[in-house]
Image (cartoon, rainbow, N blue to C red; front, side):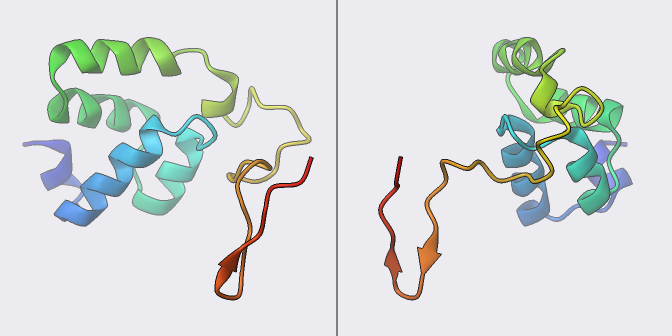
Length: 98
């Protein structure tokens, strides 16, 4: 039984889990909170969904990365969104200010 079947993830949810797993600032705890997949389940799910070469690249990228593990993050980071991300105000996107 695959992880997607075990956790009853539809195609849209599977795509979102993959996107969240690739995002540097989204910790595994956020995926667990939203979809119920623990870190080991996300790793197995990604392995099932990806070509072996791409899975190895992803695994090397997230292994030990502070931003992917809430316990390793700085206490200053309490959100999942990057401060560099543009803010949407009304119908226009505001310019990034430095």
